[in-house]
Length: 361
Image 1 (cartoon, rainbow, N blue to C red):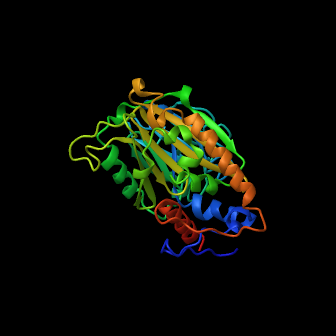
Image 2 (cartoon, rainbow, N blue to C red):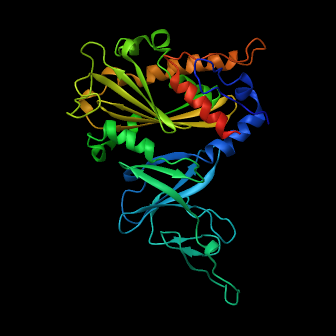
Image 3 (cartoon, rainbow, N blue to C red):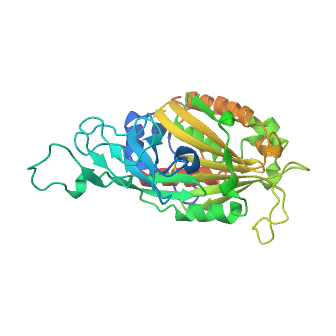
C-alpha cells in the first residue's frame, strides 16, 4: 500500500492525494489501522443500559468493523463493555436489550457474570485445564463521560485530553440532566468517502458559500479552531442577538456570545454543543464512496430548540451532503491530485490529514 506524508508546516503542506479516497487497499487499511485502533462513541449509558442488570448489544461501526460487543450494568451501577461472543463456539450472547442477572449462551448453556467472568458450563466434566482466563469474555476499555460512552478495542492514543478539553468548555452545564430525544435522531447515507465528510466538518471556510442560513447566525470573521490532542474544537460566535451560551466567570470565553462549540474526536466522532443541548454525530464508513452518519440529540433547554446555530440541523446536513458528494465525484478526475491548505481556515483539516497519514505508516 502506498504511504502518505503531510508536511507539519501547514504553509507548505499538500492535502491527502485523491488516491487516499479512491483506492480499495487504502480504505481497507483505514478499517484496521484507524478505526480498530481509535476510541469510538457507542452511545448514551442512561439510554442504552438504564438500570442495574441492563444489557444491550452493540455492533461497533456497523458495515465497517462489525465488532459484536455488549454493554452490561452491574448491581453497583458500573457499566462494562464486553465481547458479545461466547468463548465456547463463538455464538452471539445478547440479541436484544433487556435485563439479566447473568449472561447465558443460548447455544450450549455457557454462563458468564455481568462483568464477563466465566461461571459455568454444562457437560464439561473431565476437561483438563478448564476454565482458563480466555474462557472469560474479553473486556474492552470503556470511558464514561457525562453518560456518553466510548470504547477502545486497541486504542493507541489516550482519550483523556479530549475529555478534559470538553470539561473545560462545557463542564459548567448540567450534562447529567441532558435527555435523549429520539424524535430528533437522524440517520443519513452520503454518497461520499467518510474522510471527505470529516474534511468538510473540520473547517468553517465553506460556511459563507454553502450555508446561507447558518452564516446569518454565526460571525464568520471570529470563527476559531483550537487544536487539541487527537482532535480539535471549532468555536462559533453568535452574530448580533443570536442564541448563545450563558458562560460563567472563569470560563475561557466568558463575556463572549458563543453560538456553538463543535468538538471533533479523531477519527469520526463529533460532539456539537448548542444552547439547547448536544448533537452527537457518528460517521460510519460503508465503502470508499458511501458513508452513514448518525445524529443523536440530547436536550438541555427545550425552549432554545429551533434557534441559533443549532436551529436547523437538517438543512445544514443536506447542504453539507450536496457539496461532499460533489467533491466525491470531483476527486475521481484525472485532472486532480491534491490541494493546499488555508493556514487561517483549515487547521483542523491539516491536523486530520496528519493523523491519518501517521496512522497508515
